[in-house]
Amino acid sequence: MEIEKVIERANQLLKGARYSNTRIYTYNWLWKNGILSYMNARSLVDFDEKVGKECMLILT
Image 1 (cartoon, rainbow, N blue to C red):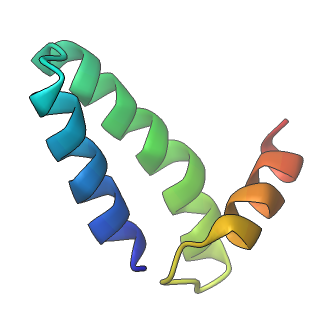
Image 2 (spheres, one colour):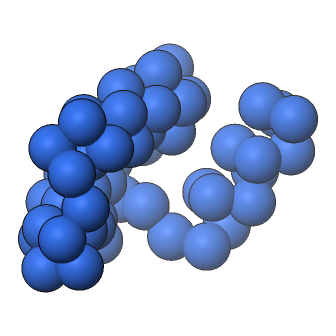
């Protein structure tokens, strides 16, 4: 699934769970500076478990 769709869906879930706008902004900032940066640097569009694991190995 495209990473933008994953983030959009996550935002919907956070809003549904009544997270504050500040908290949602924080998560979006983290995604932008973490997984999105990683994926853009590698010209990846679709997010899956493999991409998530690779990203976590590099960022930790």
